[in-house]
Length: 339
Image (cartoon, rainbow, N blue to C red; front, top):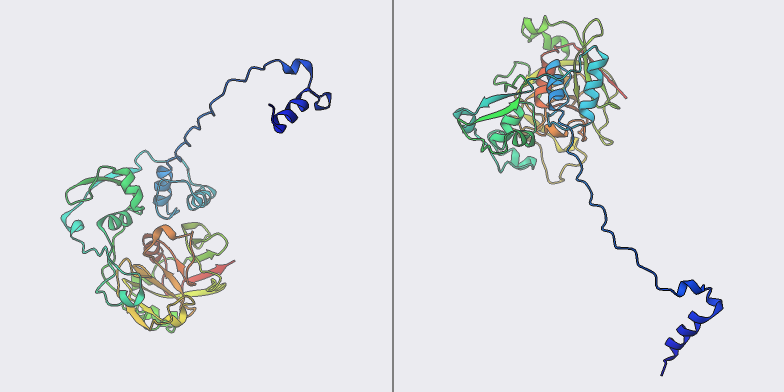
């Protein structure tokens, strides 16, 4: 006996109203099932380390060398070629370096705190690891060194492949001028009196920072760019102070006088504190003080963030780029901040 559901189906199938043609009743061959085409793996990004090394050597910094394409590299290359640079990459983009016992000895602090109150208790803001120290010495990311040396343990007496750039040498002395003590209060003329004559004899340059481009340029008296670097220039809460300023002076290996009242995102429980010197100090290995109170150029403990993150108003560079900038300026150097 047919159930009502089966009977209704049979009547519908045989009814002209169903619009079924006679030849449609013939059994149809089902098309063979096809497997979806396998997706090809995405090609690896091009290795642009040779170009980055070339730019770094020429003084058109792409920031932290990572071998990957990116906006920092693109902008540096555009500036380099616009100023007559030859974009042909060098054949010797890498070289070898043997890790010394002194390198391995550190000291290093893998448990280094990020909280300001805890950091103030430390004797120094050292590197966290030997890998971090080696990466910064050769202007690179730790990940790049690991890619260049997949079997390395990064131990003493081990020879590794590194970017072929001028290694960063950490400053070990402080200059007499201490802007951390009188930030923005000492006129450039008074700072010049305490500055060694060889520094005051440096050629005049103009340092310009573009907020829109997140970039810094140093131009000589003829208007030629002699140095370019990516920078981080502030945030919505702490915008770059547009206008013209002057360099007061430079301090190497600065301590950082933390005042939570100057930070919109500070922990309410924090109080004023002095963060010890070291490459992982919040302002890195150098502070270039400006005539705008509380503002300056400085390094950073996080070089990969330059050009990609926000700051608390000051102009941040990688430690090696900040040291290079310090080599151009002197008290009285003109500084221009633009939108």
